[in-house]
Length: 197
Image (cartoon, rainbow, N blue to C red; front, side, top):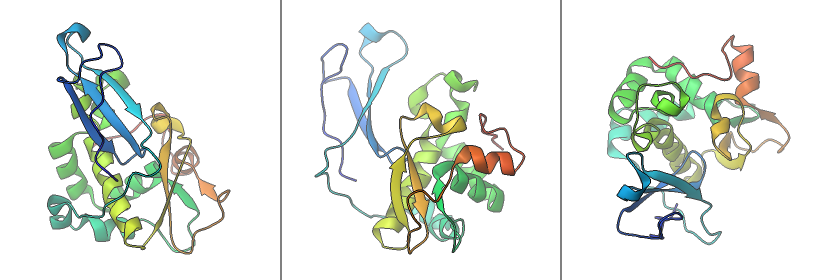
């Protein structure tokens, strides 16, 4: 996905305190403004990138070193329907608990965000693992190994306005979908929570 362009803050209209990053989980561009007028917590907002934003497929060396690209492919099974993102992250964390714990240690997770009951007060630090894994899945989709779409999020992930969905090739019908909430209920998990190691 193309790098987000710098835009003025929606609240204070300054650009000098604005940072931006691609959120591969939602396919949106996330912005944060740390201007002191917003108080201790930065003001955060997201925008849908323009439809002509180009994508790129480069592998993250840290993720590559952990074997994550190959491991993620093993989380999408032949005959699977479209899988809401959380299904794949849960399969990954169950199959690769040591590597998943390393990701949480290095990048943290949205479940650690204080707005979702976690201990981290800085939201910009607390949603990196899922974004990194989604970015790795995007690389695999760009390489033609899996397919990607976006749609409404369910359960724990519904704090996102939309979320990525992934499928094996050939792609199943659009209505053939396993949501996070359906999957979690089938696995005996609470669909509204995300358990960390």
